[in-house]
Image (tube, rainbow over all chains, first blue to last red; front, side, top):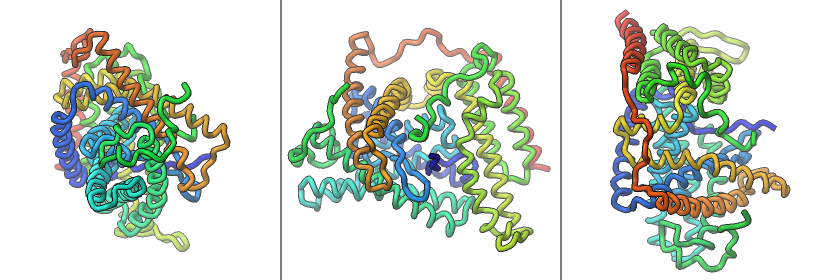
Length: 235
Length: 260
């Protein structure tokens, strides 16, 4: 069975020079600020950890799932990274993942690397992270509200990335907006559901076994209530 | 693992003759040379298409000198075809302008064909350029080159650790996915993917403790924040000639095209 993977990695040439340049600047500003946050909040011993977590996100993106009509989407992981690492560190880690995909695997163009970093990593991670912080301030401090918020921000992160990609392709004159926007929004509304289901299941399992590893909110408070099923399992 | 994997891991690493002059160039020279070919091609409008030909010729010469076979290049770049196809399916019909030709109910417009031509040429050149860099330079030396070119150290370190453990972790994900499939897991829609999330968290927790173990093992072996390097990078005359040659050919084509 062959299914067409829907990838958001934009190749070289799909964006106009102006759009590529602007998004490079945006990506560099975000990464520079993220590095400042990281240098303040990270000790040296966390660096290998960030490296293996980047490898984890890369491996997570292998999780293909069916969407509709023979197409499949794959897990993106920006929201999960934001929940586990905090929004700024998640930006850095997803940016490294996307850059390695471009340089070592030729997946996604070099001239549009800034756009890919913004669309597939930074936008989702920042949006998911800050939406969660804002939502958790007003919502009741329960496990259900926390996981519900995770679902909403994971879906939103995918949608915003897709809409941003569609807008950039349209502004560049590659594909007309009327064609690309409904197509991207339609497919990613479904991919976003898969992303939300995976992210919620992942976060609830981490809550159950290692709530101390969750960077956003007050996870220790609602950790109880689910059986520990992950952890150092059968090896 | 086909069918589960959006990044074919076997399509990375060196190809061609590892002892060739191209493989032995300084990584900085190859990064600058190949990425400038891509940047020059991408910045060129379709009207100056001879520049694309020139870029393709430079890449072909590079591949031939490194003895990277066309087959190896094709295997690494063919995954962009669906994306180009996606543009090909829509753009010539919906983007109007210039001459147009009617085929039954469909109309093909010249402006759309021009966009398609430019996009395919640029995507091809960019992807082949990156694939050739990967085929002639090991990823650790690409990273050393980038570090020498003032890439922030934290990013280089994260990328280095990521690449080192990538294959271990991806194969672990493949094994876990195989375990799910062997127990009859076959999701039909996006609501049935919760098991993948639990798998992802098991993978995350294992990865996290692996990261901690790795770091402590490194400390035990005397890691002090920098990786020792056996051979320092040296940007020699051959590297300068290579970069100058690539830039001379592509830039002169670009400038000639712009002024013609």
